[in-house]
Image (cartoon, rainbow, N blue to C red; front, side, top):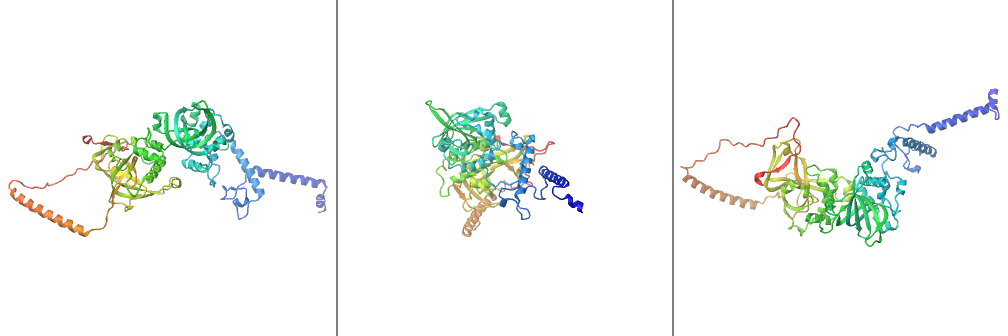
Length: 562
């Protein structure tokens, strides 16, 4: 005991050795704690502090995280990120779709331009200088074009709304402050020209042709917009005068020579597409349907996306075109009296729309429909409800009469379904006419002004009799409120019924007397016989081949009825 006590006396050599060993052990433990990852509590592996404020940090067992533990976790997180940066699959130059999500924490704030331009580093941003065209830096220019084409439409709209208080004159005065922000600009497109990227740059981002469009804003500024799409009708001539709207990413301010060799300032933007909204008839907009769509704010360039969608089911890429047309129909509907142009529009031609749908998107006509089913459809996407203002619409399924016949032919030229006198039609409308109700087996009739959306395809029990994979092809129309309508009545007018019954009995009595008297005279020369058997031959279903049934049928009008 005395020997042990002497070893603990300060200044003793053995005591110094013990202290040194203890210090080494503590130091080793401290560094091992930094280097070796610790296992978090079960069920909390993905939890991370949302803020440096301890009151907002996740708490375990009701005890807040200590400052010491937080600093250790931050060190471990930094070390983890440093180790991941050595992984070739996570290098900054990699394509964005190959990046892995770093955590599963839900976003608590709205997206910003910086979040959307995730591939553009701060060093690259600094290379964008005023008075120098962005196209000379082709790698960065292609990267921006690529990223802007991946922006969701609702992100464009929300970010442009956030900046709507900023005027274009502010961009001219402080271009650096507003650089890489999204703005919505309206003006007149005056000229466009096609451009191409360097082959090696275009191949890297899967981009080739892009367009340079010169626009004069409503407030008088000169704009240059680089985009990936322009309306097809513009491609007929480069000098144009068309009303447009652009949701674009502002790049910089440059100068160029004007008409009198004066220096003109130009605001440069990058956009995915140009929205074509002609407010008055032009050389490129002559149809009454397109005039009405454009003057109501509909982007006519969206009609180009429908040309390759005919005779196919509805797809997500058509969402904007469909809901914008619904909104336009709602804007032009009136409940008081038919619009002034109602008598000027042609009657819907079924055969023409089935044969040449790509040339008729957005055309306006009037159609008389027999409605059988009415379905209410709720708009599920919150963005569409907020941005476009469509919460629900109604689908009217019925028939249109026509003086011809449509025969479906399978791919091996065998006859399938045949339609005579009536053809199925689908109409979408924002509000039901007065007195109409949702349900099946309805008996409504009305004359509607309608925009032609496309010929769509959908499963049909009638078509399935001929081929398991055959789809019904019918015009899909967007309707305004009807010009004329008839409401089915479920009540019985007994007085009217009695009068019609008495009139009917009188006609039958007169016809019977006449018939019996005439038959008595001709009985010796004419005999009446009923056929012993009546046979009705149904259409023969197409037999399945060894390789399976044919897919989409081909509509052909009967030659003898043309």
